[in-house]
Image (cartoon, rainbow, N blue to C red):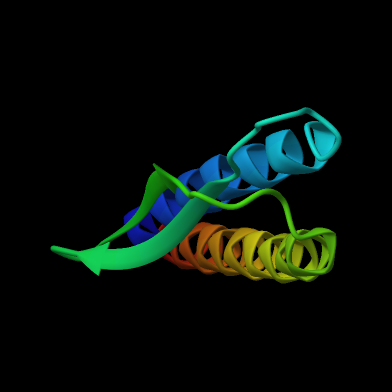
Amino acid sequence: MQINATAMTAMSNWMNNSAQNVANVNTEKYNATQTTITNQDNAVVAQSRKSTNGTDLATEFTDQIAIDKSFEANADTIKTQDEMLGSLLDMKA
């Protein structure tokens, strides 16, 4: 469950960076923030860095769809784990 929670935090950071890139698409001399997701010691981590390029809207929008689906999948996994643990506790009690 902890891995899913850290993944959701990483996806949230990525979505925030992507939203900021989209919001600043017309800002002069704005350098977009690129985010990569990595797995470090059984934790999902978002690493961000400024790029030398502006914002590519097509990439940002497709990334946002992928982030949304990934966040949803992690939330569903946590919900299922919670339901299973609840059922197990009900059987023991």
